Length: 247
Length: 221
Image 1 (cartoon, one colour):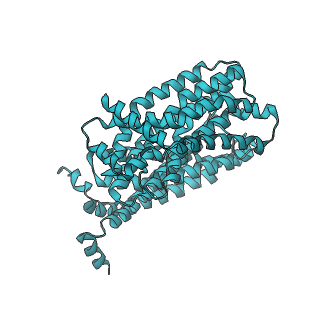
Image 2 (tube, chains in turn yellow, purple; image 1 turned 30 degrees about the vertical axis):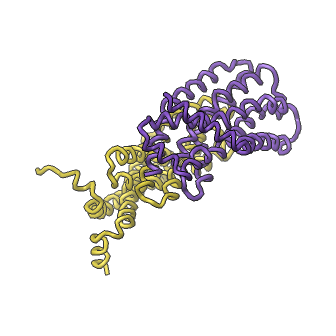
Image 3 (cartoon, rainbow over the protein chains, first blue to last red; image 1 turned 60 degrees about the vertical axis):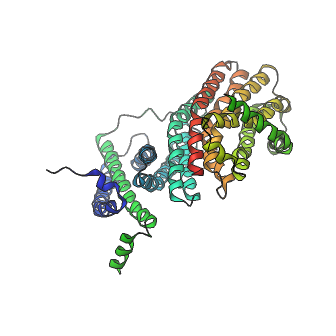
């Protein structure tokens, strides 16, 4: 087996082709997993004894919340690599991941409030998890709007990378301060942590949904990074050759 | 170290020549906090409860509004570029500029806060804790804000953008600052909160000048 030359694919030109080959696979996988996961969550998983059918929202809510946090860390890691080694592609990956992370963050908040209404009788409580999820959403918005405001791609990459790294250092501080603030105020007397022992099918459904979200994220990020590469390299000869071919 | 002295002296002189800038921030703080009783009603109990939070949010917003001035004038006349190419440590220069920013915006807010606290019915020990928490917290606001100010240097719509970047990062300071006063009035004692504010200040003093220095290099290259 020959050694793969990783450096080859750190160049946007070659990664454009590779991403194009990988995208359909991840997209199909994601569609299949979503179909299985949604089938299990709606038809196979039993109705919860205490929460009724409303609990089924966790099948999308929990994976979305996981993804939103995980994507931020991955994004910051890409940004850090881009800043340290001056690789253009990793900054583009960070930029491509941000909207998906913000989307999952929004889905987690949105579905959470739909779950909260029947369970707690309130659309929103200032619980530590909800609040820190909301702040994470703000951090995504800050990153995206900073990158959007800078026209020069080089400066936009590096400025975005710096704010992503500052954000990722702050996330634990924010999380613990919000948690402490919440316990001190003893606001809503609801604990999200007392997870009742979950039926195996419920857990299975949730894990499959989480995998589907992973595949979706990878597929969308690859698709988006291809567009970013094309936009950035629009003045290069390989892009104009590609455009001629497409015509 | 002479560079610290030099930059502080120069920036202080510049700030003194433009007194209106300092006063605008201060009056913004006063006006914003005075709007709250008009908005929520004059019940003393309610005002006493929301007072610390209102004063802290007012301080956050006032600091944020003044962030644009931290580097903008030096950026416009080219001084900042000279600072970047001078052989002295850029982190030290940044730190000195942040110190002056705090002296010109944070310190007046701290000095004004007991008076505004009295308007909200905060008295005695709680008032002392409020002032002390602002004294510890406002330098953190200037330090963290410097990151936002340096990243948005010379951008269109930089003012609104800086609020998006910086306000989420201010949340821990707000929580511990306003929480200190609440803890003191409820009898728990404010020491834990004040210690954490001090810890945040030390952390910010160590980490932010380097981050701001690299942000300035990114913005001006």
